[in-house]
Image (tube, rainbow, N blue to C red):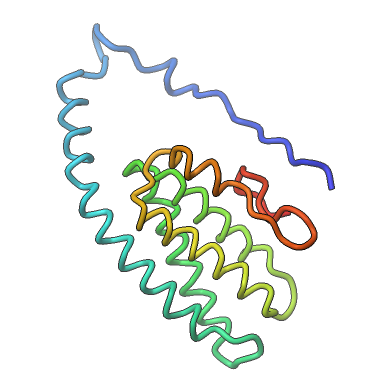
Length: 165
């Protein structure tokens, strides 16, 4: 399988916003906004713990072929989506990457759910739990780089860019 190409679109907004002059971003206002976000980081850790507890409970109860499988997958998807959306805002970029991976995996599940599907979602959950327990903000440093590759019996599971192989 060929390695996927990642295309990063140009940041056109950056070229339209200036520092200084009429209509420019006020550095003091920007600093105040950044301070508010910094204060909210502790709240994020509480919020993400709630989402992780939800994921843990739903994954523990998830069983291939059970009548409530789709409802549980919907709850899991929403929690992963929330985690994906909030992680980067509060400096936990690995949470955004893992949440995106889990969402994409769920979106692309084809046919009846299997135990392998459950196992992969569990792996995403455990990875998120490790990031939060270790307070691996940013790219996670060395621990984040080591965790970027996971080996399975027949090759890599993750390619380090939040893509399943």
